[in-house]
Image (spheres, rainbow, N blue to C red):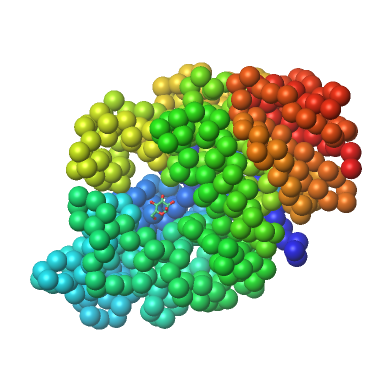
Length: 557
Ligand code: GLC
Ligand code: CA
């Protein structure tokens, strides 16, 4: 593999709206990100992915862009953005922006022009279709609920496609003119000195339109026709062109939000000449210990382990996955992976180690390093995200009671990761001097950055150590390019692997067992590199793992 700077990525994702408010309007802003850059540097991150800060009506918190070349006033100005890029650079940190080009906002000038003249130039920037039998063109369901088609105002039988909310009309990637506009926009942003992009919903650009209805898969008569608008044949050509016209001559880091990358797609997507540097590895994102399908911590971990190794096998050294556990669309991992009785100081440290040393790049999400938690609501009115309400309506339509629907949403809602950052024990966790746009988790008086900074045994300090291990000069090459050898694969409650090259042989050992366990052990330990306990109990032919222990060991060849 040809070596690139971005192979060393330890990324930190920021959801700006919830990171730090500096002007008291209750909304996080770019100045707030600048304020905390030193902390991100101290954590050891060298890349920041900034969720969208472009001009937006905020129906989907910025994932609905009304002007790609402007910063939303709630976040600040273009000057603030330039300052952020500069200040980050001084600390060795590159900024990735979030490129949302599967769709725009319905407030974008292109869509406004398209509505006025659906058959003119801008109509071809979007996907307009005639209805069928007095109904939508087909019965696709939007990912966010309801029909994927919305009637065009003023027309009897004309619809536009939106695979997310109706305020996020899909762009027409079959149209060369549209593609050229997007490339130009990407190049302009690159000129500002960005490190690259995270590419939103990028596996959806190509659609396989059908006028025939699919068998309904719910009481709403719609079908979640995912395979008709995800990873569709021909997608690779579009993505290749995008890369060639924009990123190819640069050293940009590009990470795709790419669903269902199969073994046959790897070369095209992240191979040596693939369209992106990396893609987020979503293999574990449906796992949730409180879902009866798993129901206990060990069962969940065994499944998670098998999926991690399966994903690595698919890639098979042909490219680099992006290993992560939390993001702005997922719940917090302590609640997602651990039953309440398994949540403690040891298990919360063991969790991030599980995938942090696998081949690939790594990403952490704001607040993960503090162990921030889900924030369940007493009623559905406590939520604010449009899709949450669509999910609620669907569950009720399927016959669930209000309590059952709320229970499922409290378990799975992406809104849990969007509560404001907990900086200190002062009012509103130091996030804002005003009223936060979304309530702060009440646990902030104890769980906050300042408190953890003062406690060398805290999770925050452990995350710093973990990052430092990955970056350690004598080990880094092995973590980046060494072989992966899964270990103890059939032992329930153990997730372990080796990373090996000519220089080092490293064994990563983690257990989700509340009582720990003794494992047969033939290695000779040279150094205990990372440990969530003070001791490592290895002796004659066995190693005794303590409850929820994690170990990174340098062993003899
Ligand atoms: C991606 C984003 C998500 C957003 C959606 C539509 O999945 O991560 O937050 O709502 O795309 O842009
Ligand atoms: Ca603000």
